[in-house]
Amino acid sequence: MFTIGRRKKKVVVGFALVVAVLVVFIGISTQRHAAAEGKGSDYESIELFTDVMAIIKKSYVDEVDTKKLIYGAINGMLSSLDPHSSFMSPETYKEMKIDTKGAFGGLGIEISTKDGILTVISPIEDTPAFKAGIKAGDQILKIDDKFTKDLNINDAVKRMRGPKGTKVVLTIMRDGFEKPQDFTLVRDVIQVKSVRSRLLDDGYGYVRIAQFQEKTDEDLTKALKSLKDENKGDLKGLVLDLRNDPGGLLDQAVRVVDHFIAEGQMVVYTEGREKDSKMQFTAKKGGKEPNYAIVVLINGGSASASEIVAGALQDHKRAIIMGTQSFGKGSVQTIIPLSDDSGLRLTTARYYTPKGRSIQAKGITPDITVERLELPKETAEKKEFMHIREKDLEHHFENEDKADQGATKKDVKKEKTAQQKVDDTLKNDYQAMRALDLLKGWDILKTMGPGK
Image (cartoon, rainbow, N blue to C red; front, side):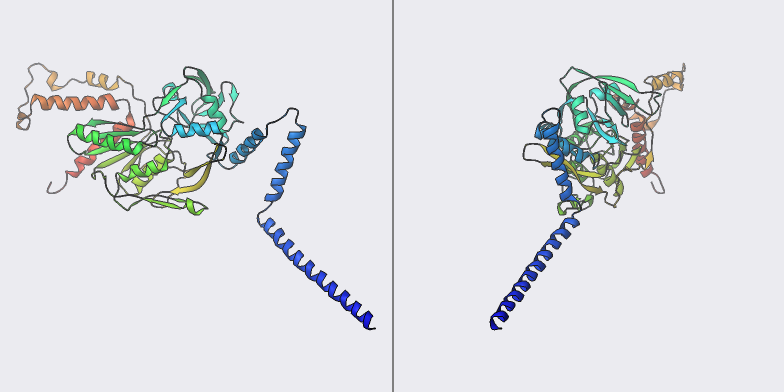
């Protein structure tokens, strides 16, 4: 009995130990299974991907390079997210870094995909695309007889770039076209000058920002100083032209706004899933412009960084926004270098104006809507020629206004020179003319009222 009892006891204890081990094992397995389920079907999907790649490597009619398969898979993965996330091969990544410095080869078009169609965000000023008449909103259906429907952004860019002097044909569909039209462009080395400026009239400056590059803030500082030097004093007003500006570097947009708003005021903030993507950008001290009037010009080709500038100045009531609705790109892309010198352009955040407005797929709405209007070059000259004035009549009286008696020939010449500048720059740019008129009207209104 004793022996049998001891044997029975061992069996019971042994059974209990097995049960305990099974309970622990089941518990661990359940936790792992729950964790796997918590991540969805990630593990199954990765297994599916490796299975497909193995089948292709083994059974595809031709031998396939593994890296080519991986690059293609990553491209497909990113193109399924949004139009602005993309994979960059080592060659494309290198070109991208050159682009931000303002020199690259090609046609000078900023492109995206809209409703699955390759669409022009904007042509860059003084480039083959701009000179050929490519416009914001144009749909590129074919590049040299190759349909763009199945092309991602990187492939499309590769097809449009090439040696200087070579030709490329873009098949374009545009509102107002009855059928697609071919545009033949000659490739060139694109040298984008970020900032251009000139004095429009006495006291009124014009600054054009074509793209936000590494030296945009530095170039803007020089341009504003040059305008003041030419004007021999502070400006009375400024036209800041952001039309067809496709954007660029976020930090440069922040620094541009920094010139015009007070220290500590919000410029833009971003919201994303990761902690690092939640950022706030405020104006720093120093280097502020006087509180003169500003009109910012925008249109459908104004995107991203240019919308940040327009939105911030509009929210702080520092400028009047004039033109047409902007493009509506309210997302931030982070460039992530990878181990083989390739790169990832990934949408990591949305940005918001100081008042919390997201412009994603909406854009900046102008305070004053002014459509683009083509003005015939001779219109102003013909109108002037058709009008007969008192001074044109024989034996007219000369002006004896005492207020003008102190005016010298030099003053008259200066006035004519200033007017000539306006004519040369603006007589065919309806939106810019309206902006200048608004600035002048603003200045006049300030002098009116009781006691003035």
